[in-house]
Length: 227
Image (cartoon, rainbow, N blue to C red):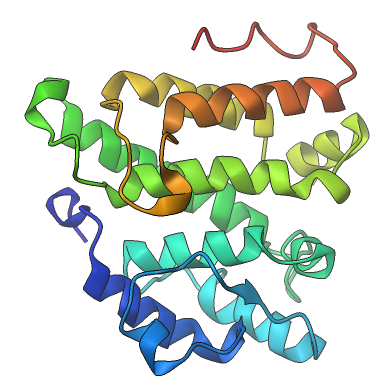
């Protein structure tokens, strides 16, 4: 997939819904598969074998069907219960990697790299304000996913475990995404749940959420982005 292909594709989203449908609830209908509404699904958490299969096949395998598939997977995990979020925090059977590493390291880094490539040497005026870019939607969704972990990861010690065990540093992540704002035209994205939502308005509440976990400590965290 090249940066030029990163504009949101309804067709690709329909294919993504079809692709992930065995692991989604409510079970996607034919109408769902022919649409681009990815806001209604969550991941099955029983039986555990099915949940593990979803993680292995669609998060931890290192390849994806499209950027829309990444977006759909992140959104579905965000809407899922604690069992799903805890499952992606576990190491695989070889103790080599986990779902959180793919989501917060590989997928987010990929989205940011496309933002940078698309905007390098370009002015914000060169981007249509009514055209959603999938990489931006992925970055926003991953930021919102972090906040959705509120009932699973709620102590500073758990943030430290994420960093030491999985090399996933949420503080560093939000700072990198905030930096990526320099390449990001302020878009009002097309889909209903993203109206008035873009990287600028997503980063600040996330930063404050992490500050709450750290009990207001400003030693570990720099000043929140000036948004």
